[in-house]
Length: 290
Image (tube, rainbow, N blue to C red; front, side, top):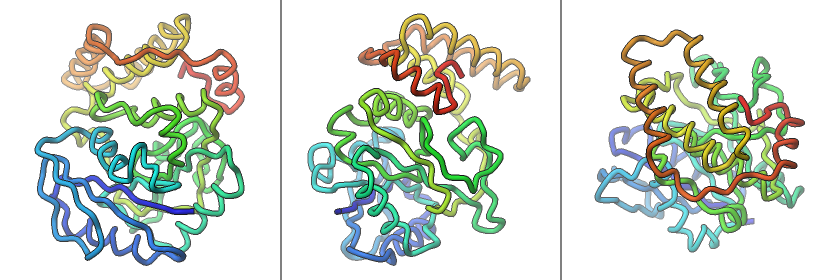
């Protein structure tokens, strides 16, 4: 089983990028071909054998990753599985790639694996990095309904069947969009606590566009993927949750602006999931209303 890896970078973390690439090179088993995409920025020096692509503009996280996918042929067909890794992450163990290979070989319906993200100094996994509602025990592996964007492995047959990440999202919720489409097509998603990416603890709100794009893309996600009766339920729940979290005035203003933008702008092709997929998501512990 051939593995590839896609890393996008803004060129501003050269030391962290080099450490990540070295950790990929140290993986047991066959060599992993790596593509680094400079997302509107020059790519720093990389080890010999690592391919680089420099984009003239920042296409956002999903857009940059889609370019990396196509570097492995149409829908990534030159590889069986692609790893997507944050440029400031690091694989601390050398058997991660081999464990991925074994997992995908053992289960032909397994489409996506979400890694556990741990702080390199404390070993702590943030609750938001466990892709399920019952997130109190990050050391428990399980079947899930979404995955972590910067620490995962995707079978390229999934991308060929359901399409790439939604490039227009730019940032936020693009993983759930792909996950829902994959689940609707019958693929499975696993969270594996034993597959670890070290990554410094950060707050998602560090991104200036966070509140607006989280809200806008939440609306797009629902409009693109949910059966019509569930769209207002899902978005009503998230509106209520946002208000209960009592964001600051500027954050709430940005969120509400993004929420309006999600309704007033094109969201891409609408392909509502089957009702049996809704039931499947519910049985997995995350009904698509929250």
